[in-house]
Amino acid sequence: MNKKVITGLSVFGVLIAIVIVAGLVVNKPAQQGPAVSSTGDVTDTNAAAAFYNGKVIKWIIPYSPGGGYDEYVRLIAPFMEKYSGARIDVLNLPGAGGMRGVNELYSSPNTGLIIGIINGSALITSQLAGIKGAEYELDKFEYLGRIIADPRVLVLSNKSNISTFDTFLESGEPIKIGATGLGGSTYVDAVIS
Image (cartoon, rainbow, N blue to C red; front, side, top):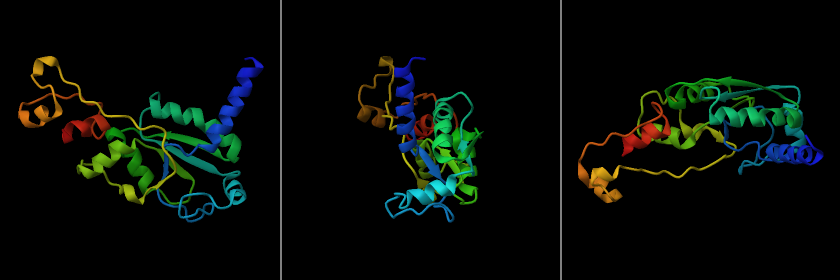
């Protein structure tokens, strides 16, 4: 690797550490963690650094190894370890479109040492739609940040005679919609449609 690439990776590491919270949640505000203001800002960075140094953070990924969320975590975790002084233990808990891992995160002790990466839109819609297995209350999570907001797109074959969303809503015609898994965003989108 040339020096320019290494420098770029170092800068990238610092940026990742700064925005490390992107897409992460903790189960509830930490009772023993660093001081946090009402806006979610850490009020004493020295206290935060001291709190995490030498500790173990369990990072729950509610999806299988090798997917996008798993890749995000495995990319970010070494930088979290480097800049926080904590060891990161990654735990994949796939199942029910992410609900298994999120349920585990939700029921974990609120120590500030258990975090997760979630598909927020899927879990919100799962809770709102009353999907079986959603044993969490999203308003009880402490949100640390967001990685991405994907737009939703509904595409139908031109053989369907449906050319607008209004026509889709009014058609009454049965439509097959594929989904990636029970409780996932594509499943919930299909149920809501």
